[in-house]
Amino acid sequence: MTPAEADKIKATLEALGCTGGKMEKETEGSGYFEIDVAKCKDGQYDIKLDREFKVIAMARD
Image (cartoon, rainbow, N blue to C red; front, top):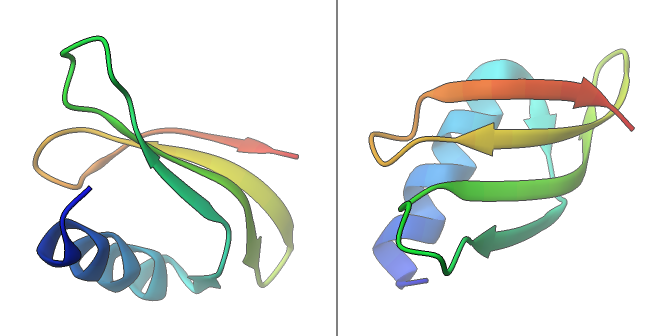
């Protein structure tokens, strides 16, 4: 994951009211990003973003 990608992920998380978590870029060529155990206002979530940094899945951890 590039520093620019990490910055975009952090901005997306902040817009959701979330911080932290372990950020990973999926390696099977999908271009998806996963954030494990992001801390949000109402709990911890695992979040999946697409290549455009839009949320495609958000599950309470």
